Amino acid sequence: MPQPESDLVRSDSPADAVSVTPVADKAGIALFISLPRRLYAGLAGFVPPLDLEQADLLHPAKSAFYRHASVQMFIAWRSGAPVGRICAQVDFVAQSQDANAPGYFGALDAIDDRAVVHALLDAAQDWLRAQGMRGMRGPLTPSPNGESGLMIEGQSEPAMIAMPWHPVWLADHVAAFGFDETNDLLSYRMPLDGTTELAHAVPDGMKPGQGALRNIAIKSLSKKEIAQQGEVLRTLYNDAWKNTWNFVPLQSYEIESMIKQLAPLLRSEHYVQIEQNGVPVAMALVVPNLYDIAGDLGGAPSPFGWARLGIRLLRHRFTSARVILLGVSSRLQGTLLGALMPGVAIAELFQRGHSLPYNHVDLGWIREHDMPMRRLIERIAPLPNKRYRVYERAIERPAPDTGP
Image (tube, rainbow, N blue to C red; front, side, top):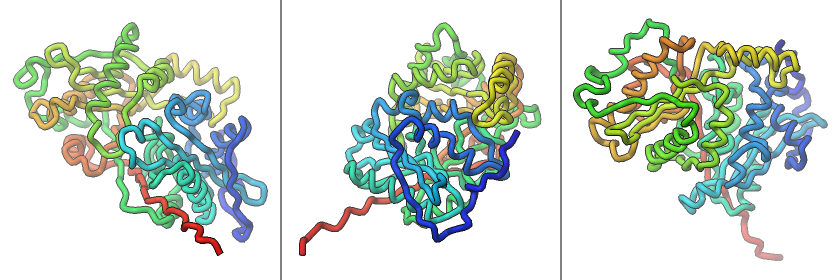
């Protein structure tokens, strides 16, 4: 059952001071993870994610990100009540790729109060400054390989796995903090109900084994080879996106952790591995939408709720899914074959849709300026159904102390 609207959603005493404190213990981490469902309970469009899922992203004992990063969580308080949260992160892999890479902020959620939002951003900025960072970028939770961006459009759309929900007011408060020009990430909903003809999605002559694709073969997920296929996926993903904005390469232990978390959800149809003469050159990974079977259970289900979730999982009672990884080998980029690969992967997903229970698949995130990919997708879904924004700004240095 939905929780009643929380009295934390708005403040009746805006004059009360806001304090922001760092999270320093297990109780603080637990509050940090569960806080969005307390802040947003009762708001139209909000479906609380499972605390367990969020812990995989944020908890130091569960998130692989902590193996190559320094993270500090903060909670904002007013009149003794928690009214917002944020985390600040320094990603040492990103720093090793680019010494000028910014620090990150993420997991930003708050009541409708600009003073609260800015106090949280100030706390993150101060911490990043103390770590030597010259800029801050986000929300990235906890990195570009997690949940990216702040929801700008799509609050009333169905919830989707690993895509955060934010109230409409939050973007205005964040923008007012003084961020530079931003980048938008788009998500598209592709119907799999037979109303869209596959021929409209991709050019003619795209069947593997024919024409330009005569040396192309497609593999599915093998539970026996899932570790090896995970490494192929990681290698292809890192190769495909290595020269793009905001990219940070996935580490081997990150893909191992992701496979462990996703394994109960995955079937053979969920992975597309495209090979040219036996060599992997493109891939796509689809994940069933956890909200389909958990959205009505709340963020912290009862024992009975967990039992219901287990039954639904075993019966694969999903109606939607999301393409979370899609990439083409850099050696094919700029070639005709490389241009065909995303369409081949999407066509394969359409064909597999007949054996899966989904009526639609979401494809995101797509960078707003990636027009080749957008043109391909918009043959199927003309308009994005969700928009997320990544903000960035330089971190001002404190004025030097010149003494009396």
